Image 1 (cartoon, helix red, strand yellow):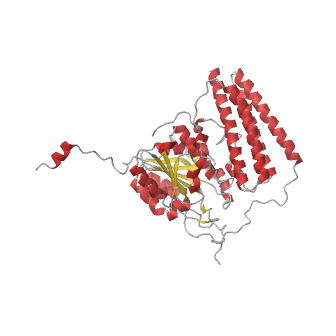
Image 2: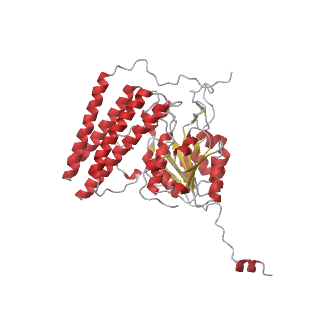
Image 3: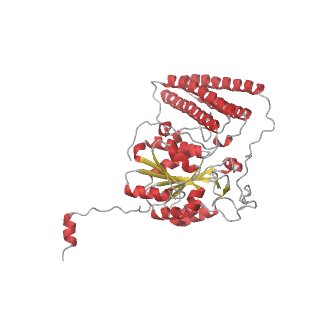
Length: 169
Length: 274
């Protein structure tokens, strides 16, 4: 039972970090294509953070029996894995502050997810790792809060399209 | 369908990067398709994505399988021809609401009627996005966000699921771009369905219809099993709000073309017997 709990937890952890990395990469590329450079660079940095965390989790999971789950078989608190930026929360004209707030929400969701395993698992190793991962996510969130504190407030920022639709004269 | 073990969703993505607006629901459909392929272990060499024209129809370029970016509204015609000629392939047609229900509307109803063993994914954002936000066949009658229809299009929008049912589609599902994991399951089930499977996807256009980001609050997953009775399904599709997701209708129907029985020489002799 313990092995099953640990394997299940690690499978979810690997998927969580992997999904976060891929979504941030996808967003960084899309923002680059839409010339929102500072947000693209920020999402690129978040993708790199996720890659490092994924590497750490994958090393821990190596050699352990992980269940082979399909994308729809993972048990997430919401529709997607907790650290994955939701599509409808993104806009190509979003500000750096908005991007950081989105990432902060993701980090806190991941922290809460890991914390739930740390608090509820009956397996000691799972509890220990979940607490460690949760603390790491909390530290990422704290860094983002610090960065947000240094950012000037958004002024006259709007998401609406400037370019009117083509009209027949 | 040949299967590949342990391929990851990202293994099914091509090196071409999407140029959709960040926040576009079509990213989610792309991810759902690659997740479904990984879940089923699909062999990309035996898989073809066929599309028409529009933002959503760019999708085949982003998947590492065979693909054909076809003519506006004609993705379904090309896909059906391909599947009939090569029944061994997994064939998926894709497109948007304008491509599928307006320019390609006739192909859509006949594809439903014909029931070739393939999947059609319609990414519905209720707008022509590629040409900068004009009303489409699924736009609400009072949608007045475009200067081309300042008082709204003023005509009733199509209900794609009802249209599919009335045209004879045997398998109808609805997904939502805010839930790519559920959508991946629906697409996997659609691919496995023996016949024409229609996946209607609520896929938001955050640029020209930013109000669609509110869909998350109204989308709900259907708990009940898919309806198998067409009368019951017709009542549901005509009266629902269009935001319930899941496999909504599933009825057995024989596929087209019917399997040909290869004649043996003894059969021919028998056929010519006086």
